[in-house]
Length: 138
Image: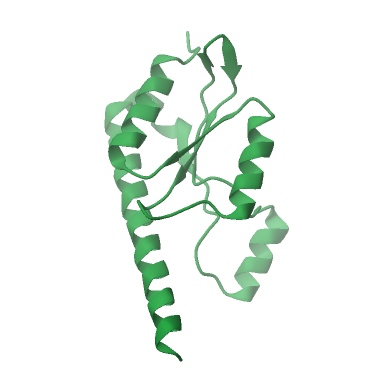
């Protein structure tokens, strides 16, 4: 294997590990900060390395490429617009959305869902706190 391929694979693995740790921290914070609503924020296990058999099974079960990492299943009113829920894509500081993720984002936003890309813990906190304060819960 060439050195540039090894470097690319290593940097991708490191970026994915950063994203994993950031998402874990974000979910842990949410579970403590917004305890009554713990089950309304959940992960969508869409990424990761899988064998062909597992990938085939998941695709047959409905896994869709490009779907965001997290979903907060609470509606909110922001600037007189009602959103059905909030999708959150977790990225490392140097990470970026894939073409499929951008396409999926456009589709979901057309259905009145909010979509946010969070690259830092504080960005996630602000996004979620703003959302929770704008929720239409009674």
